[in-house]
Image: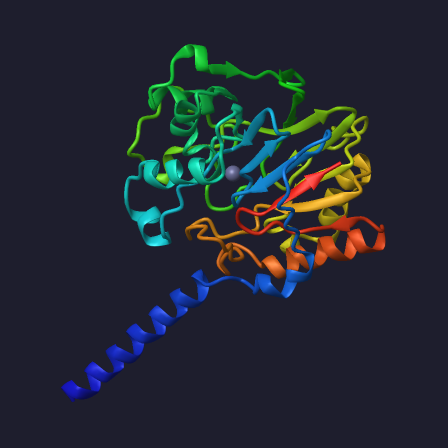
Length: 327
Ligand SMILES: [Zn+2]
């Protein structure tokens, strides 16, 4: 009898573990989309801008003189650690990435909002790069908690234009994707946020898109997949870095509105997806799709590929640390 109970228990535990493993495994195989990979390795010269991807929506812009960083999120502890412990920026990994990718001319860091997977590392990266942190009150309080001086903090206001070298970054008000289990949209970090801290200690604090203007060219960055109707009516951008995480699971009417209110307005000629990778895995040269319990990433990719294909718009994918040369 005891043996039978033990056997049932073993089977039950195995089933639960198997279920958990299944749910946290990638929702699809990114290599099926390898034909869309882009990897420009040359240096940015003659008015070109090189953009390098570090997962989620962390992008390094570089024209050979000036560098800008969107988000600057590099600490990616494994799922269990992320869910159960207080965390600090992985300074060893960040230092290594700064050296390896020569982030020695970063003038500005622009977190899109203050969630963990965007703004967790802004204090350390801003300090280490001797840059300026441009963001919401929440993002600046993450900077303050990490010891940044007021001179390194710039509170952005809607539609403000920030000039850094030959780049102009315009702050475009946006909204976060519809909240799932964490309903913290608009919740502000009002005090300096010190580390170690838990993922849930980083509420949204307001969401921005960015319009990067360079030498007559325009690039739009929309990390969080949602839209304010009409907000992009008068904006054009030949390139759009577009957040696609979870769009494939939305109603077709919403999907089509999202596409119409973003790419339809911007009239972009090249789309590069953001926010499709599992940030509970270190980058290590390869990004996997978001896990099954949060997304169906192949559906997200298939939707945007089908739309861009029909509209004859170029679609490219950046893997970890890969770059695209623009213009
Ligand atoms: Zn977020």
